[in-house]
Length: 577
Image 1 (cartoon, helix red, strand yellow):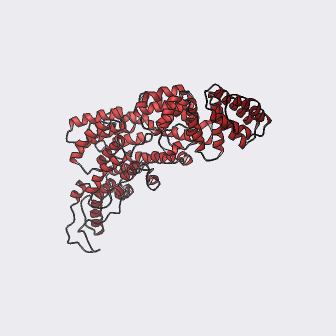
Image 2 (cartoon, helix red, strand yellow; image 1 turned 90 degrees about the vertical axis):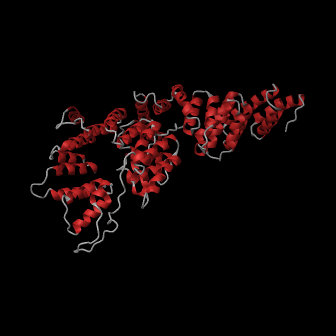
Image 3 (cartoon, one colour; image 1 turned 180 degrees about the vertical axis):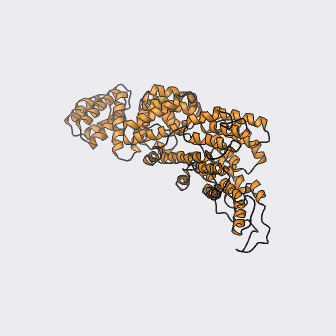
């Protein structure tokens, strides 16, 4: 059997990191070193309230450069660096402040937040433990650090303990808990928390985005879009919300529909290319455009956007660059179903390419793990996994049980029709197999030798051997053509299509004068003759068979023609060449 076709659960990115530009002075802000400026500076707090952290950084750096003092100037600069994603610069500022005598111990917690943002989780924990409670910020940070470090015991302690040793009932603490539920793929639990908070705090519109993200992960795209619209009505230019809407349209419709949803962001942008300014949007455009510019964009984002690595693997798989896909997938530690599925697909492709049994066994186990799980067994991906598992085990009747249960969802899907057709053929349901294989449209699949051989077999088994022969005549000469000829010769002989069996054996004999081919050709010639005598085959077929026999340098051929076939032809008025 050929390789099963898999469509991994491709998802656009769900994390955001702005592609930072070097901060520049806000419009109207100019100065000469050593001299005071007479121009009015933009208001710092107006910039921060408007989330213009690049502008805030420019104002604060300008003030520092010109030695203009402001209360908590360094703290505001570090705050702006942090919110602008420039975590290392924020750390530098905090470290400078901690060199002063009697510094505020809260700086340890702030620095720990930056360390967490740059994925230095152990260092973040060590730093946070030096700081004060800070209205629960320290505990919330340590809770997330424990999650990143897979410290389940510590996580449970923070969860069950009361403040100041654990999480409380404050909005911030409950948001922290919901975030962990989301990160652990407990989307329904996260949704319950967000909905409760939304009932208590209707003015917190951003909670609608969090709920919508949970519904997106649960595949309830329509529901998520309705909830998301509440936030978009207040913040129509929100990158996160607009991106989530685009991702939902991608899942519901296609890449063009998704990309159209992002055009509003560019139209609302006052400067620059909004797509290039946000790594998340750059990543998702690759997905929406079916892999366009993948190698230019995705490798840079592997460390910042979780889906970038997964989509880069998928890109390599689609291009049959299995070794490159394996290099990325080898150290992937799956945590959610789609990651298990993707790693299973890579194992399957690697095993089929190399002919090694071990990768195929690993693929089968990963597919079974997902398909048999309580959360996935009744989902479409879960049933696809079980079908793939049984396909690799060559248990085709079981494959069909699962594929038939989801067939209605894939009426024009080439991957599904290829898998379904192959399974039907392997289970000897050739009529159903032929219908499915003929629905495959991609030329890439239709030109594969495995596809051609299954299609030829289905034609032969459904009494259309002529179409199988046409498939052979369309092929270029290669080792594959010899294999296809053998299949046509043997299958046609078995099914009683002796004329086409004779043609196939004749070509094989001319390629290689092996006695085996002559024996097959002789038997097929006699079979054709018998069918003509019984008027189950036309006389012109017999005439062609006689030509083939006379082109054979074998004394048995001469005897068959002159003593048997010729005699019958003369008695029945049939002209032979």
